[in-house]
Length: 243
Image (cartoon, rainbow, N blue to C red; front, top):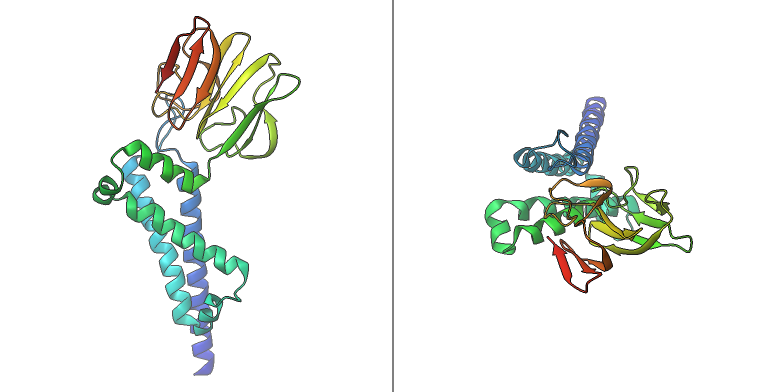
């Protein structure tokens, strides 16, 4: 009987780990597969599938915890203050997944956020920690660091833990970073890259861009970027905005 109980506990433990791994893979895919295309013809995940995948990932994470509690009551010890950091990281991850999934339901989302863009910005920021920083260095290159979920580094996909060059140009004179996009001035031309869901790149469409694209078509003396807007002061001192 003891051997059977031990074997059953081991099987339950392995199933719980497999379910937890599936939930983690689901979360990774949700972050990697875009809901909107970054370029024409690019495969995307529909909003409905994205929502269902989120609920499945949440269900898998909850099942993972529940199975572990059933097959091994000692797991409760890991919920005490002295638990290993990786256990607390898992608990934080579960709480974050709940925060990402439950408020995203249509009725609750409309109650909490009057503007869908506000919800979208918070949802993506929580999911991918998409902050980035861009500067113009002493040699007039643009250097960016941080997350790159929407192409906001203007370079190869993948986040950067150290500054990377956006491109090979060395005539950048100004740079402005929004929440998930950036704009810069080089050789008198303004270019932008990153998230473009509200047309903030000013290139005439709403496709995200992983490399700088010409914005506006005019000549600007100064630029600024916000959560979903880019603003430029033209050489004629006229303010122009894209959103």
